Image (cartoon, rainbow, N blue to C red; front, side):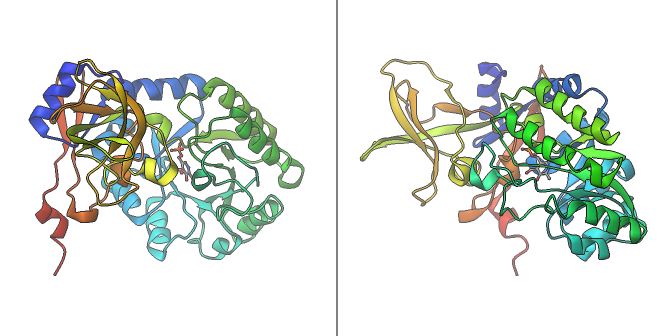
Length: 379
Ligand SMILES: Cc1ncc(COP(=O)(O)O)c(C=O)c1O
């Protein structure tokens, strides 16, 4: 976490907690690292990681394109004037509305199954998503390129689907692979790109290889980039990538206040954020760094629990903290990706505000919801 503690205290006092805070400098730095590693590859940000319009505009201004996987995400792209080469439409079960929007906006579609060839609007540009059937170093629910996952076509089907696209009058741009998220071992990417490269004798040269995203935060980006470029070169293709988490995770922190403590079988520090604001620990057993923003003695080990009436509502386990008191602030790091994006209104909890630190001051980039906002569309 790069934000100064005084700025975090100020944000919590002004905007309340729970609160998502973002550091613009870290956002720019992450994009800089991607560009430094991947050179001239085209970057489409996977909007699912964090779809806040303010952050999207910032990435758009930096020349980044977008990957969308739902009608709502496509609507965000359209709202921002994103179209044509800057837009990819992906997803395993696209609706008619998504095909129509993609056609209107001139997007590139990622075909996820053979049947989709017949569903695409006429004259579409398309990539074929390949499932390389690998076991990948991440949580099962985050693995998308493993045998038995619902994503993509098999290695055997891929050349046939490319051919079917051409026969149907579409532009078969090339292949796409995304093996999962928060992948720890760079060798997984090497293996995936290798399996795609093996298809070259059947596909012939291709215009595009989309190497997806999924890079863990500590990933050897230059190493992954080298392998991705090498695979693209096998096809004579331009390299595209679509990172989500890597671009935004470290820029974001979830600020939460201590509500109290209790000791049952374990020592709990209870805080005002939980599974509704950061679902990743519950969903994937994800571990987020936790930083206490108070000083004191009596360091001991605590589980950090949220306010929901759910046993799984834990943000972290066995964190060493100075003795906590009601009102103390905790910073949950690496929360910029799939934090606000996955936040929900279960228990009629209103979603937190989001603020961006530009080095000098805070900018409110999403208002805190009220309970009335949550029930506004109910009749
Ligand atoms: C097709 C596709 N591309 C890119 C991403 C981004 O993944 P990550 O946020 O791990 O980089 C995802 C996320 O699951 C995805 O499904």
